[in-house]
Amino acid sequence: MTATTRTFFIENLGCPKNAVEGEGMAERLRQTGYTATDDAADADVVIVNTCSFIQPAQEESIDRIFHYLNTRRTGQKVVAAGCLAERFGDALENDIPELDGILGTRQWFEIDRLLAEVERGVRPCWHGAEPVTDPMFIRQASGPTAYVKIAEGCNMTCSFCAIPSFKGLQRSKAVDDIVAEVRQLVDGGAKEVILVSQNTTAYGLDLAREPGSMRSGSPLARLLEAICAGVPDLPWLRVHYCYPGWVNEVLLQTMARLDQVVKYLDMPLQHADPEILRTMNRPRDIRHVAEVLNRARELMPDLALRTTFIVGFPGETDAHFASVLAFMDEVRFDHVGIFTYFAEDGTPAATLGGQVTDKVKRRRQREAMAHQQGISATRTARLVGHTVDVLVEGTTEGEAGIGGTGARLIGRTYRDAPEVDGFTVFDGIATRGEIVPVIISRSGPYDLFGTQANVTLPALASIADTATTNISPVIAKRRIGLKSLPMLQPR
Ligand code: SF4
Image (cartoon, rainbow, N blue to C red; front, top):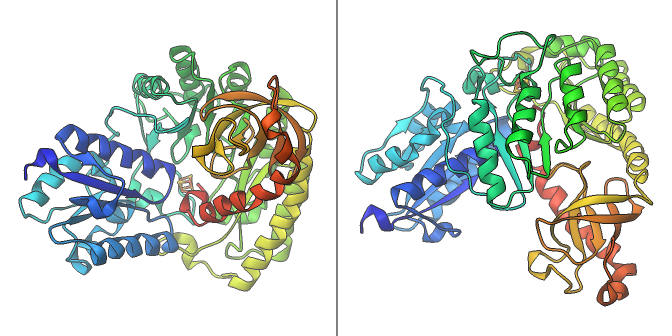
C-alpha cells in the first residue's frame, strides 16, 4: 500500500487552540496524500492531539492514548501530539514505548514529515523545539463557527498557570495572514469567527512593526479593523480571553464602532480580591477593572460580559471569597464560570502555604454559581419581548431534522459564545448557519426561547407548549459534556 492511500484519524482534546492545530495537521496530511476518516478503527494512523493544562486534562489525554493503543489493529500506528507531548515528551517517550511517534505542539506542522519517519519504522520523538510562529495553512470551515488562533504562547506569569512554561513566549501571526485565514473560512461558509490566543489583548505587541504600549494604542483593535475591512461579509467577529488591565479605550471604541464585532467581552478575572490577585500575579487593581467594564457598557449598552473566577486559591479566606461575590453583585456579569483551584505541578502557586481543602473549594464553587444564577437570569430576561438575531446551529433533535420536521431550532445570539454560554431555542424554519431574527418570549437562567420572526409556522404550532421541557436534556447533555473540557479552564 502506498502513502497516497493511507488514512488518518485525529482526536482533538482540550481547547479551541488545540483544535485549530488539529485542523492544521489534517490539512498537512491531506496535502501529502492521506485521507481523513471519522472512524479510528479504519485509520492507518491515529493521532491523539493531547491537552496538558492541568492534571485532570493530562489524565484524560493519557487515557485516550491507552484506549487507542489497546484497541489498535495490527499495523495501525498511534502518535501522541499536542501539549502533553510538548510538556512531557520525555516521559511519553520512555514510559509508553508502544507509541509510534511523539510530536510536540511547537512542531505540529511537521506531522507529515513525522509520519514519513513512522512509516519507515523509525520512532520519531520530536518535542522541545525552538518556538516559532504558526505557519499558514488552508482553512476549511466545518460549520458556521470557526476559531482563528491569532498568537501562540504567553508572556504573562500567572502563578497558577503552566502554559507559558511549555508554550513559550508570545508569537503573534501577521495581520495579513489572519485576514487571509478569515477570508478562507468565510468563503467556506463560516458565519462567526472567534479570535483566540492565550491573551488576545497582547496580540501584536511582539511584532516588529507594532511598537508601543497598551496605553497609546491597541494592535488588537487594528487587527479587528483589518478583518472587518478585508472580510466585510463576515457577519460575526468575536474575541475571547481579554486580559484585565489591557482592555483600553482604543479597543473599546473600536469594538463599539465596528458592526461586525459582536458586543461581547470575555475577560477572565480569576479573582476580585487584591490580595489574592497579587499572589496570583495578576493585575490587582480591581477598581480599575470595574471602571473599564463600566466604560465598556457605556460605549456598548447591549454588551454581554463574561468572566471566570477561581475559588479556593491558596490563602483564600471567607473574606476574600466574599469579595468575589460582591464584585459579581457590583458588575452583574452576563456569564460567569467558576472553577476550583488546582495545584498544578511546576507552578509557583502549587508550593504556596494555605492550600484550601477540596471540600471548601467545592462549597465556594457551589455558592458562587448559585449566587450568579439569579444575576444571569435577570440579565437574560432583559431580552424577553425583543427580536434578536440568532445563528442557527441545529435542532433539538440533532441536525438531521432541520427545516420544518417538527423539531425546534437551536442557536445562539451574539451574547452567547459557543460551548460556554447559553442557547436560544425557537420554532422556525431555517437551516444550519443562517442568522435569523427571533422574537424572544421567555428566558431561563441561561437560555432564551422564542419564535422566528416573519415566518408562518403551522406545522410547528402543536409542539410549542411541550418543547421547552423536551429540550432540557439536550442542553444539559451538552453542558455536562463540555464542562469536563479543559477549554473551560481559566486563561
Ligand atoms: S492564565 Fe492565561 S494570561 Fe496567565 S499565564 Fe496562563 S495563559 Fe498566560
